[in-house]
Length: 354
Image (spheres, rainbow, N blue to C red):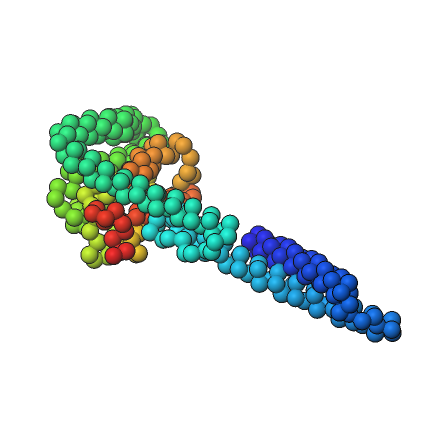
């Protein structure tokens, strides 16, 4: 589609250039003939040859000029498009280059002003997030109570129901064991399956029995402790890598910690995965987080967004001016990609911008 649009633009520019050169040539010939600078050509064949040569010369010049103009316009539009793509990926530090003084240049200046305002808003969001983290510390007791109430509801809704079903099925096994041994075997298999589900639910809930905040630790330290605790309880392989030297404001660290905690919980409760991969990198003022598992995946719909806490994760990432993307399908595992612009608290600019 882009190649077709580019071809159309080049063709249109060539046509406009040829038309312009023919008009200029015709005006020039008319003026030269009017003031006697051109002598009549007695031979009609020689006149025809001269006219054809002049025509093709003008067409060639017009086509060359049109191609040159289309290349200039295309190059400036590509620079604008590359910058807008970087903005879309969450890197507002990329500034539009100088695009000239024509309409495209003025459009670039206006987009540059919009980009600077957006960068200021992202910086304000992150400072606000840090302030919110400090205020939330004062409300820590109420947050813990609320978390315990939520866990109690999940225990009742998920684990308690599973245990009740296991109890009822176990009672049925005792009644059918002597009458129908095959049916009793199926009931025992069902009990094993329900026990595994209940165990996964319990592990996920235990994962949430963590401090509400990182309690003075940096993100890497908190995540490594969380992963270590998880691997003690769950037979899952976790490959974790984080660039050294990453230092984030407290508001971003708290939100990222809770987002990754929720992602791990989802993997335990729903994915049936045996391996998880976590990568955290910082490049050119942009923090990138990738979380991937080899589980069963799922269809991304409104019901799953509610039950998997995806909307909560989206809200948290919005609060720090980032972007999050879910890539999943049944049987294909799940991949979560997060990008957050890393701002300097004092200047409001990206940390790597200097």
